[in-house]
Image (cartoon, rainbow, N blue to C red; front, side):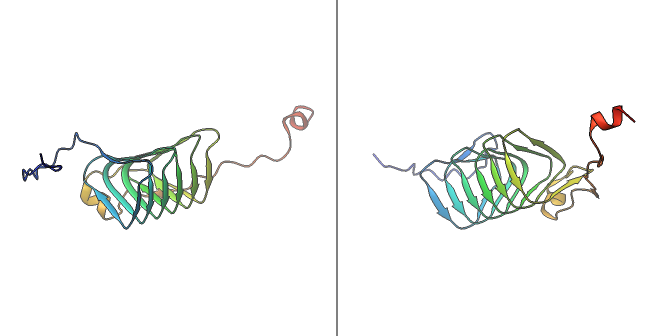
Length: 153
């Protein structure tokens, strides 16, 4: 019995998930047409034309591009997401992020700049060319003084 299937089935099935398991180390860039889950270590860039999930044991040294992304592990590099970026409580990110929608859970570590866009990549052509919409400022208003001081004024 052969270890690998001898058939030459080269059709792409978007329902199948690619998995890089814990304990696996890869050096080099990774490109996936479908969903990808990483629980191992990767030194290089990742480009996913669907959803990328970085598990709690994942460690990435490089830049990430994806349509959607959930980060639970550590990333040392920039992250660019066309739609939703979710940074879980266990995540540690050192680098800049850009996305359309952002969720950061309490406890997550994020050191870098955040850029939000008003539009979603409408096609993979827009995604590939980095056209995610017009950037907007994401600064919160600054209030001087405490609530108690304002109550006595």
